[in-house]
Image (cartoon, rainbow, N blue to C red):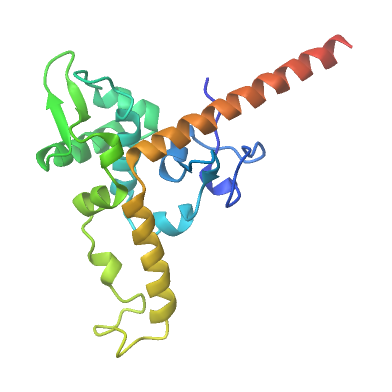
Length: 207
């Protein structure tokens, strides 16, 4: 069984995995990216997830799983749903929608399913969120005002604008490949730590 970790449990810079806060492994898909110096960055897991829908979150998590599907092969909805911890019937509708929009290839039959049409390194999160949700929520006033801009701001405008820009930049620069690499790195680190913990436990029992 793969180890589990919630991205919201980690620190801003997480060079080592947190072991005291566990959740679904699939949760990793929405927040971890790997930088050139091998650090794992979780800049805005909570901030980012607050602005897009559960459907967009599921799409991102499913795409991370699809990033590992070999060229010319397909993954079945049931398989993706189990790996990403997503309701299969809900996921099927999301993937069909994204296939119609050109993000995925689909194939029918016993060996059919879905695969990425766009290379994971060229597919950023903003494109997925836009395809599933649209970007209207990014422009909406957080205080509900009909008119809210730099010339006529609400009390939340300046802070929200800075946060919104940060989230937009994160979604635009982060690709599915970034998430897949971060997911795999964190999983391997956790497996290594759990193996070490198991060996220490075995030695203690023998002593």
